[in-house]
Length: 301
Image (cartoon, rainbow, N blue to C red):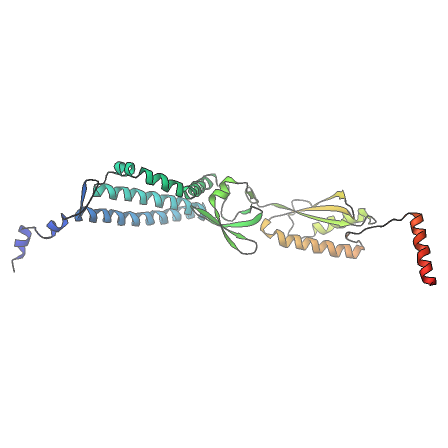
């Protein structure tokens, strides 16, 4: 066995294997050494991208900028670092990126059409992050459903319905359609309820009881007085509308139920009848007389 200094003096074997040609891309020979270098760059880039994303989240959360903003910014930075590292790895191998893009122009166009929706949602996520019109915790009305934003991602936003269902909403839906945000400036919400009473009711007393019941609600915002309006004279009832302000639009269902029950019991105490559809039939005197005669003839028979 030769001594160690002999191996150092003749650096053959390992170095020769590193120069072995593996394959050729566009006239560029890829050796074992360049392939290992590219693999090292990709590994380091993946590690750096994860570290940067975690760092961004910590910084944003400490400054109170919100989990959704931190996740979106961290996701954008993560993909930027990955793409940059992948490009550096290709350059390390010796592949000309410009020539590669030119050769794959047709493939890139097809891939662009296939990823159109993904890119659209990605850019919509950036817009939502920049404008901050929607944030985690906001109560929205999206396509007729009232939902609460739980988590905002780079491609989609996770919301929760009042039934506890989790829905994944593409960011393009939130950015390009009309969305009602109940908590954009503040969380104040005006609850609306309607009730109809008989035409024979004492309307002064009806209004007084509605105002009294509305003020007694524990969830009502004290800074805003309830509003009671006679909205219309319906076919079967006099319709009143009641507006009461509250601080949490997410609890609108429970508040509406509480107000309806309070109105029901208040009208029970006052003897006010809540109207229901009914039909009054008026007959001409000749018709009424004929019916009475017919009824008398049948009783006589």
